[in-house]
Image 1 (cartoon, helix red, strand yellow):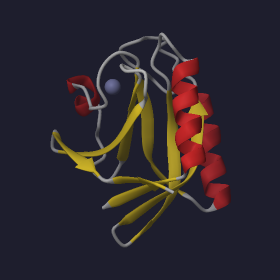
Image 2 (spheres, protein in one colour; image 1 turned 180 degrees about the vertical axis):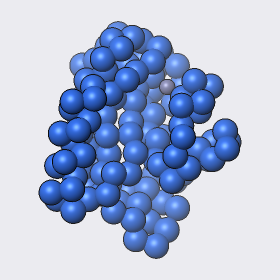
Image 3 (cartoon, helix red, strand yellow; image 1 turned 120 degrees about the vertical axis):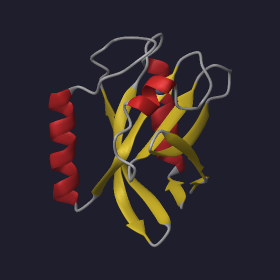
Image 4 (cartoon, protein in one colour; image 1 turned 135 degrees about the vertical axis):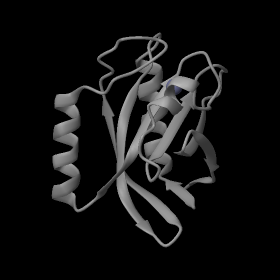
Length: 136
Ligand SMILES: [Zn+2]
């Protein structure tokens, strides 16, 4: 499975992550799947109600509004993204523990270095899989 993300959405995600420092930032992603391609059509920049540099919880009200918007636009909820302010772009043990949906896409953006690093994963039975990500 290859994940396609618009360059403009990549920029919005990294800007949201930087704006959220020193805490983790988060949001939802929606779009469509065609064969083995997952196309991200819309990114929702949402609030981390945990206000923590080490974990996140998406604001439930904002989540509801985003999911309604996805339905209106005919997009499928694909998964979520969150930032790691000072750790690499890979899912933490906690992230994996909380990843219940094997079909969901998890994006992690690391701000540990000057240049942001964004990676895509899926998680099945506690095992993380790296997904190829293409900016379009
Ligand atoms: Zn994490």
